[in-house]
Length: 312
Image (tube, rainbow, N blue to C red; front, side, top):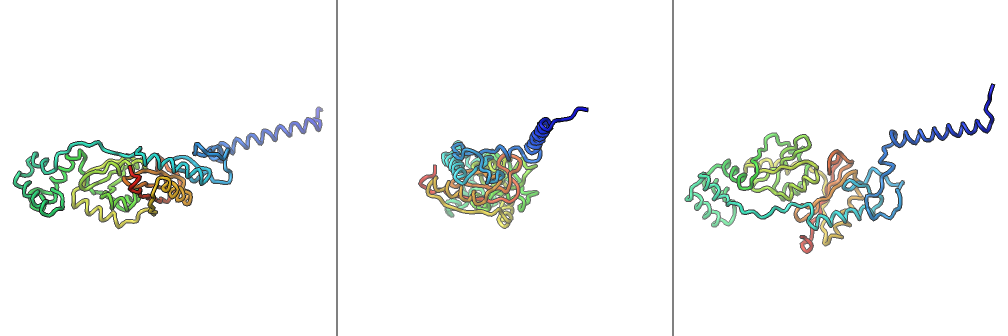
């Protein structure tokens, strides 16, 4: 009966061990541990670390879809994003377009008379405040419904309603500061893919694009009737919004430093930076979610106001 020598037995044992190790590595690489946790490299194109930082979690921090291996690399990525936003890329600047004045539009539609329009204009001039639509309503020349319809025609946008508005759920879509300062009401989200923003007098395309880039959802804007808007706006302002940190920067480099420090301190699983008029909005999530810019878990915001001498 043939038998194995000690040498051949050792070779077979060595071969079996190698096969076992290879099989284990395959299982670890493909099933037990997500593959991207092993192959993640720093998202900073100028990273000088040379290889993976094994002591740093690869689950965070993640800025705009890329992991950074150190605070220095996080700063470099944030600084590049600040430069991008300050230079104007990613902002919405609507081309100048002549719009028919609201009073003339309603006069053309036959909703008011020239006498009523003149009376409202005189009252507006004497008071030095108020919109022409408001004065026409005060003087009972036209109803609020028709003023809202005229605003929709003037801005080529739909008239929206606050029906089915859930202010508590909508508070997570943007900071309270934006709701208050820009006069907007996030009305409803449809299947996490379509967000409706309501405005009282005119849509804000800059804010709409910023929210779209942050949320990953398509944003539609429209006009909400005055009283309907005021009621929904008041309800929004008393809700609990995500925590926010307010900072002011005198230069792009100062903004990048402060934002990167806040980002490293929070160590989020997802984060994105956009510009909203004269400020930078950094939103952070506990962990990455589905869709561009989205995340799950806790949400935190950092709003950095831009100094007047470097706004563009």
